[in-house]
Amino acid sequence: MDERNALTDLGNAYLPTASGKAMADIGKTPTDVYLFGRLPPDDQRSPLRNATPEEQARYLPKAHLLVRQEINRARYAPQPQAAQPTGPNADALRQWNEQRM
Image (cartoon, rainbow, N blue to C red; front, side):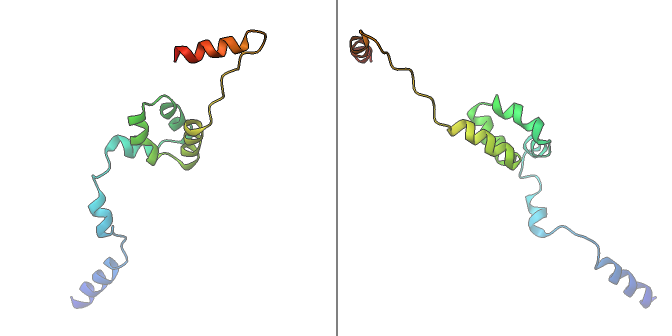
């Protein structure tokens, strides 16, 4: 009987178990955020492009690295400058625009 218990204990020593930290982290991530992180990159791009800033803050940390890079590049890309008026009345038009602001 002792040999059987010893073999059972030895067999249990090699079973994979979750660490205490992993067990403590269960339930801390909301289900929708967790499942979003498991989507393929192509399925993550569209919702993130159309997301509000609050939604982006919620889901972007769990997105794939390439998707995060694309979204951040689009978010922080320099905006093109407006065309400057040219021609004989350009100075008058600039002054008029400045007065309006």
